[in-house]
Length: 545
RNA sequence: GCCAGCGUAGCUCAGCCGGUAGAGCAACUGAUUCGUAAUCAGUAGGUCCGGGGUUCGAGUCCCCGCGCUGGCUCCA
Image (tube, rainbow, N blue to C red):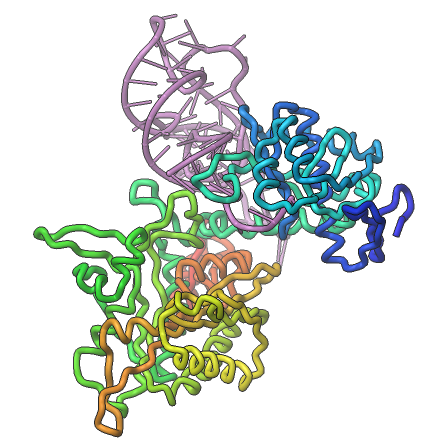
């Protein structure tokens, strides 16, 4: 509907213009928001091409937090351009320009965009358009676009959008393609929503674990020892110990056995596991006496060695091996981020070897454990994703038809039995088996992927794992990978941000601080502190003046 | 890795057109013992990320490294 003063979305409808020229009203808030953002991105493109006429257009979609537009231009955009662009957008908007659609033939469109030198658009049209296609004109900007768009820029509230940041990107997202300059912005249907979004960004900055980690003296990363490698300070390590002890006790209670495996192994192990072939780019490889070794990027082959160290009977199963295993993986320098994305980290890893009959119970117990752990750390909201294979590309997956059905039945059955809600992700499974991922939602609503339960149909075969069944024959066990916290480093980062640094008492690195009132109470304060610490409290004595 | 930006005291930052480095907080010393973050006085602290170069002279300009930050997945 048209609200007052130019008319905006008022929780009822957004007036839009479809490509065929008809007017419509979009009432679905999600759809309206997407159209609104997409239109704002065109407005931004119009502002940019008007300020910098030598700029050519890439694409400019709405995305989950706003929108972006990719541009091709010789000179670089700088931070200082952003306010100028924003101002220009408001200026254009005040003229109440219409989004004018037009249907043209493919040839006509190619001519039009070629003339304008918009070669990227021409490429897109050649690839994607049918015989007839639609373009929208906004002021001097003509863009190849299916629409719909808001009817006119008057429907865009000048206080509902912001131009936020610059980034590099690649044409069609492929790093082999030419580089483009991306400008990000965000828009909301109302200025209030924009304001609360900006406040949330501010809140996220306030909680940044990199800042809090330094201020609370929890951890650091030294340029000299290397990027992506965490140095745990005493206070951080204290929290880590609490986490590990809590987890260890719980796992022992639930029938896990702890194992410990070496950090390096001959490449032969990684050839058998398949990592050497498929995971090579992420592995650190080095030589000892002319023989190649690998620093472990995963713990599974080690656990498998222990399983294989002797003959196993069905009476031994299920076997649950757990390890806080430190692994190293090469990550591109540009993706490293505090504790959340690192090159060396400790997984709270475990592998379960069991019979097909035991799978359902194992998964049920596992999901129960996941929920217990999450609740213990103060997370009560989560999302669960069940990733299954792409039915149309069965050939790309390991395991038999029967394996996949058995696994999926067990996963779904277990989720049902404990009343868990999940989302089914078709085609998201890894090639070696289906999985369940648990994403928890933190204090300010952000999802974090932590727990994962994965079937593995390849490793038991590659390592020829077996157990002797009641029939006296050898059978192949089912193997499950599972992590609860994922990586301790990453989990610590998430905890810091979730609690904004204010840990609950059982996790807090310092549980009590004793402060003497004056010089003459010092000795007494020290006694109080040592008494508390004797009782197992993490105490500090602050006897500064 | 690629694109853009950044890298000055422990932290946050200032340092204009190149002339040889500064503030606040923190630290330390002394005074103060005062009811809820920052009392007063003083002291110390910097290979201006590293390495080359231009220059009489470089934190400031150029080149090469290293690191950090935001992106590089959302598809007309």
